[in-house]
Length: 115
Image (cartoon, rainbow, N blue to C red; front, side, top):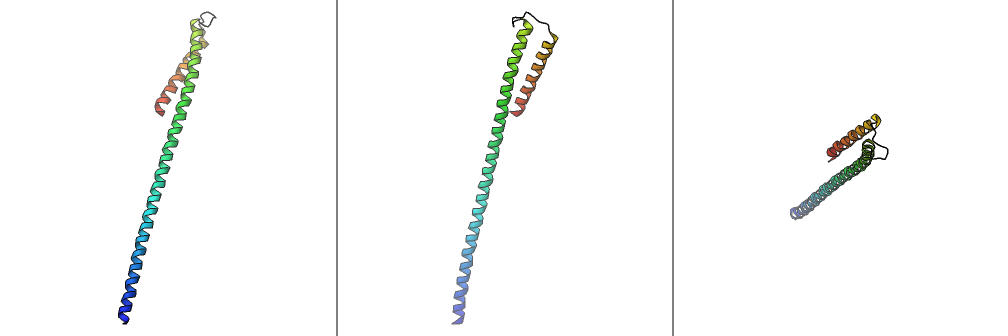
């Protein structure tokens, strides 16, 4: 009689442990999946942030290029004599025009690098 009651208790104990093992395994699996989802979401947010930063940089480059283009047009008109002052061979204007061209080229290179 004692052996049979002992074996029943052993069997119940083994079942309880195997159920806990499955629960523990399930909990671990859930935690791993949750961590993986969290990591994936963080990576996605990081990519989004980087894309937004690049977009802002491209917009800034575009604005700076427009400003340089407008200045360049005014300097070219002054050099050609279309500004109403007559044609000027002012070395300072020539130097300013070359600087504008150089700045515009630098912006174009930066734009290509960002892309």
